[in-house]
Image (cartoon, rainbow, N blue to C red; front, side):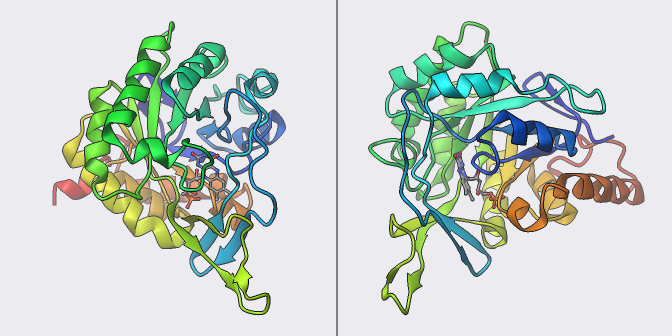
Length: 309
Ligand SMILES: Cc1cc2nc3c(=O)[nH]c(=O)nc-3n(C[C@H](O)[C@H](O)[C@H](O)COP(=O)(O)O)c2cc1C
């Protein structure tokens, strides 16, 4: 009943761990897969190790949190060891779906990464959208339709096993649809919408300075959900590739909203920090009850429903 499919990859349910939250090592990824998630996305990693920013890197604000981790990464050689330890199936015997989130500063870095890991995971998500990345990575790419096209196209050509490629995009642009269409034209297999919003800032009024070491960071959590919903809705109207919705999900109603807007699956990040990993089984059960009550037999029947009315 809860199954959903994206570019030939079959998910047991539409609830996926979002990149960057509890995705740094195989043991926490396996834990989340065993807890009922339909799939997991790793924390974004790069070719070479990157220390990221110093603490504090996250701070709670009204409606969510700000983070500026600075894309800290152990480098692909170290991360590959974790990828190898992700279980092929969960404790209930269902196939686990692992998605690697990667970032780089140019097409070569992205394609080398794809070569390196395409046999270790089921899908690859390109993070071209981090709002606080260092040195030309992240949103510097995803704010430019031509660069986005070039990265996606290069990655698609670099893959020797045709692994599905998702482009994760930033809302921090004037027209996200222009970037989404570029990714689609470059033959991305799906869009992940959205990365964190902003960036924003919080000031400590006693210390009289910004709290984050990077001063500003990306906003996530419930407050960004309406913006994410709007972009998923628009992408459903403007693009023909599958959409994964992410931003502020904390309960089954949020998931239904994203699916009605046009998402085939959803990702959950910040809410895990408040609700724990039980959030996956809780939403799964609530979603099933909602579907039964509303006489839906499959997720497919619900996708894009709000466009009909
Ligand atoms: C602490 C933290 C770290 C994150 N790290 C990454 C990352 O490494 N790569 C990425 O693509 N997105 C990253 N994100 C963004 C999330 O994957 C997600 O797009 C965003 O937080 C919105 O979803 P949420 O409101 O459910 O958290 C991070 C978010 C948070 C809160």
